[in-house]
Picture 1 (cartoon, rainbow, N blue to C red):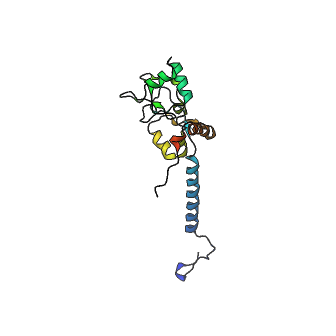
Picture 2: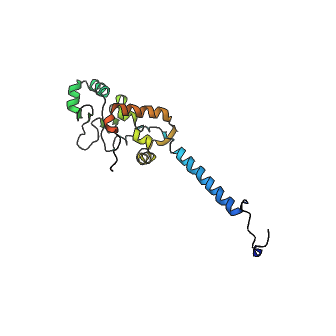
Picture 3: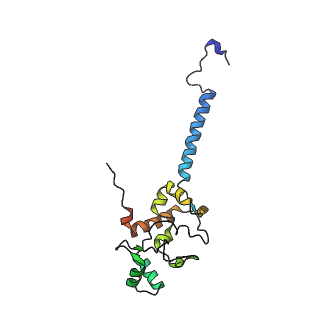
Amino acid sequence: MPDPSIGFKPAPWRLTDTHFTASFLLARNAHRDAAVRWYTRLMRFQCQSGCIRCCEQKGHVYLTPDDIARLAAHTCLSRAEFQRKYLCGTAPLLRFRKPRGKQCAFLTDAGCSVHSIKPQQCRSFPYWPEILDKPSERKEIAAYCPGLGRGPLVNLTVARREANRLLKAFPQLYQPEEDGG
């Protein structure tokens, strides 16, 4: 290497160690960022036996007409009786009435008493549109759901199909947000 005191400058087309290192780091960071963006579109989920943490979260469980028919038959009530006893709201947004101190009338110490016929909204968790669309939502859900991040990779095509069923069943809940300006 020539003596720096002579005023040697590398040719503009020549990469110095510093240029190479900076270029390499930029390329590596861009690749890592792309990998992170790709990974956040992936999702692992496996419901954990005995877990009811999703059922204990604040919120409402909305029911489709099919849900109401299944649950009414299971409880040996007519649809009208079931609706009077367990539901509130107006069609098409009928939801479970919340008993005092509980999130759901069918949630017992032993778990969900209607697990085998649970409503579509419950069955589809965590494949809700807002969870699939926003990695930040998945991170928030993972704070209480031990099944998120475990098990096999979720087939996002199948998960999106489930989310679309919710969109179709409850379009009023998924209206696009209006801009404030």
